[in-house]
Length: 376
Image (tube, rainbow, N blue to C red):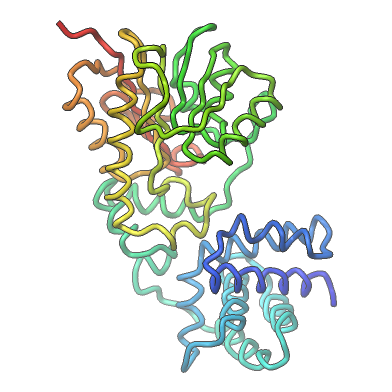
């Protein structure tokens, strides 16, 4: 078996497992690659095939379903998606895409895969709508169009179909530039005491600690707290990792110079990095998460000393989780004094800003900041 066939076989089996077992791509792919006998180049090829096919799953299904009379078995479906991805989106020469994909499946599926992929390769396509062409659930397209406007939403969705760029901080930690900008937005001086109440895996907490602050990193998941501690130890920065619920934080009120609430969210700004998330998140999740975010923010207000800083960030683009959440918090807490809108790559909003994936080739992110003032 040549390397191209071997890589496609591994990718097809990984996709079948991810789809049939509802496995997370990042968790499922790593052990599959470790068990394979592929070299570094082959593993990179598998990663591209798996992540690219997951991003384009709806588009790939549309391409092949035109030539199917009934749903194919799961393994054949995975192979057809891999082949369609190569033909339409990866720029693989048609002969190579078809022949290697056919060779990567069991004999009983080869006739079907060969016939359908040849038709995909030779037939023009007219996409029925934006969601099918860009490969997103309709609700995501509709929600972001309503919240961002048609042009900005389409550009964001296009950008999140591109592979994520790997960026490293000066200390070697791998972190998207937008996340680095969030940490920069937490303005601290050496010796300040800072709480990061949703800290795992610790990227923002370690960046803030790297500027001389003493950081308490809280996370509700004990296993993830260990990851925060490991990252802080490796980087040699002062972070105290603590297991606890940010809604009922085991921290002293009014103690902190700054508090960061990098809250759980729908993640609609990081879909290039989490290709299967677009098929897992539902519209109801947005409504549920806004309640979690509000509870975290209300608890965080009480942790900040008078004159201290509260920072709220989310890696999503919905209005409910960004601008509306920030406005509702300010209405509930008159002691919050908004800081000026953010500058640079940020699209300015009252008290903060948003960066869309197309703005600077980063994840989509929103940040809002307030000072705590003493009320009469």
